[in-house]
Length: 322
Ligand code: ATP
Ligand code: MG
Image (cartoon, rainbow, N blue to C red; front, top):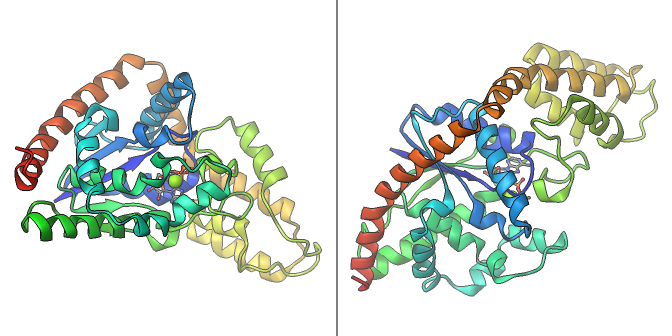
């Protein structure tokens, strides 16, 4: 069984990426052949500065390793190390209806947030389908925001198989963890690197404190009153990070009233710091050894190319290019 997932180097990783994609990916890494990649072609849609793109790419690599990705078990590589993905994207685009892309929520969301409606952004789901299909992936752990893209991927693989022969492409399944399907950002919308509403995974603790204390939304319930649990971004984030017992205590304190949001925010900060402390320490070690990351990615690139070669060859033959 092959498991594949990707992260865009479009900014600093956040706790939504962690709980939605990275943590499940690390958990799945010993249950099959794992292919995890850094989606640098995709990030070009939102990052226009080459130095920035390089820096984010490196940082995402370090952060994923710090979160427990084991490079001896996982094929860890850059998307651009296997440029054949663009060829497969082209082949898929010839069977992809424009109307299907016009319905993509993620495209509409990005445009609504002010990103230019480029062809690259519009065609993102086709390149993403190629990312998945190029490696004969069976399972794809993702956040809920990617559910529709996975449906497009399955649909395109089905169309190719129908037109050019069953077995040309493997149809993958999404793996979506319901409890972390959409991690809210500090403004209550989906947490996204490109929306400026994140709780970063590895920022300086003082910065995280500032974000939690000053930016995290709460309602105007007076201190003495019970606090509504539903739609509470604070509580949703706390549930992801704190122990079951601490969550139960916090929920009871919400119901009881008499405790202000400032106090709850401090508990969230403590839970955050405790949860990510071991990863922070590992990250420091990785930062001190830049040559190691290069080695890991070079080895990953080689293995990814070897895995992609027979698939693209099979597709070329099926469609009449070879
Ligand atoms: P961008 O704003 O550039 O799209 P992003 O924060 O949405 O960045 P991606 O690189 O697009 O991150 O997504 C990487 C993985 O993280 C995907 O599997 C995605 O589903 C997951 N993910 C992203 N944001 C969240 C979130 N708020 N909750 C749960 N999963 C998320
Ligand atoms: Mg995204």
